Amino acid sequence: EAPAAEEAPAAEEAAPAEANIFANATVVEVSGLETEGANTGDMAIDGDMATRWSSNTDDAAHIIIDLGAVTPVDSLDIYWETACAADYTVEVSEDNANWTVVATVTDNATGASPVGEAVSHSWDAVNARYIKINCTRRNTEWGNSIWEMVAYACEAPVVEEVVEEAPVEEAPV
Image 1 (cartoon, rainbow, N blue to C red):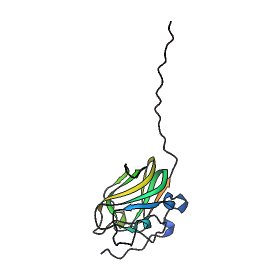
Image 2: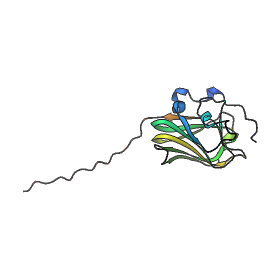
Image 3: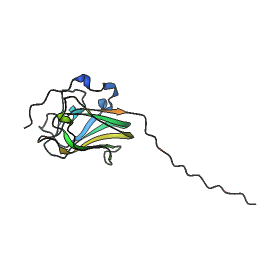
Image 4: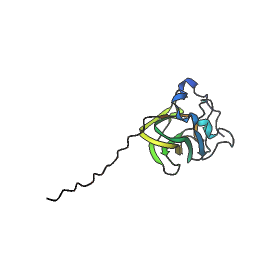
């Protein structure tokens, strides 16, 4: 059984709600829960720093968030509880099937840091409808636990178009 939860981070330590694109998002999948019906996935994006998602005690744990529409995104803050993932990736997808890793973390110990300290991730802007935190190794004997996550929209990514020029035909002489 997990230890008594530490004190939740103060609300003022979180990013303002209007910047958080998770405000209207939904959690579509979690790999497991510490206790069925408690500390559910939606608590990781509910804007309440006093609630949290807690996975079961497997190293492999994940949470997938649906933004509701393809959105340009370039950063994410994770407020880990002491029971944090030591190794994990942040992945994005437009279809919840094909994933691109945008951040890789190894040997994270932030959960042992002062409560309320976020692990901030940033990357070149990408279009995404889904964001997945894919935990591959726990930092404690308990599962992975996230107080809150905040993702940020940005300008649409620049897509370079390759324009092929038609060959120029020369007029006969």
